[in-house]
Image (cartoon, rainbow, N blue to C red; front, side, top):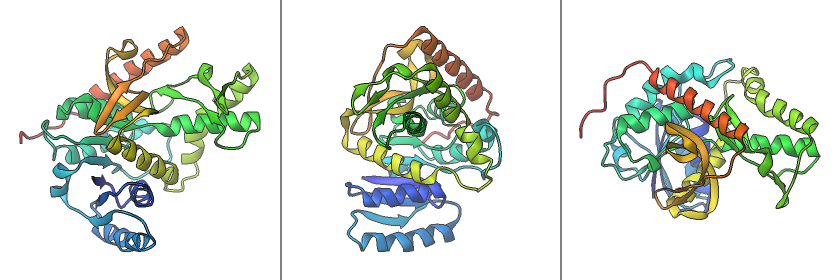
Length: 310
């Protein structure tokens, strides 16, 4: 399985590579970045990870590797800034990911896994731009659900890993927490209104609090591990696992023409099933609002030349 990581010299990209080499798969990991000295540094370092018993291979790559990728992870992005919304990166990151995606054709048979933010408008726009089948253009959105689980666990005084909870919709301020699907140790759990308020404050302020640190880094460890596990699920097929992922919707949840985070399961090389969970009227309204926002954002990206026919 050839996994090309565009933006592989950055914190998230390098973390994805590290976790792929530690994982159970035997992947050919290729780092692609406009900073060749950083690529070489990571490769030299990760070669010694392989010496400690990890599987697979690691090397630097070039544009020619992109069309031969089985899974193309796009983590390249503009420099991080102090802000209150991932939307500030939309135009700059659209230009970055367009250069990478334009190396593909509609006949390409791999999976485009977008990590770059804002992930939902970019997935919406890239699926239209490339013509790649919608179930093979996926956005990484697991972190929203992980932060919801952390918030619930802290509100209930639980150790990490005991809570299962889900966020759907937009990867941002319009994410919809599914409080009616929360479980603890596999059993349904109800939160009081007071505890919900605490959790909503935690998840609603997490991004702003993190970027306000002006650390120059994103959630590299969380995303690196999550993306690597998602790559393995896509590569091998994981029909019994449910993942939140941004995917172009065509009627699911009453939405058309927008890529949103929804529960999916994978077959090898694509999202096999989009699970349509029953939503409350309030949750359905939140998802519809997110879809309207994502569509407008995707349509508002400054015009770029279309992909060249290949």
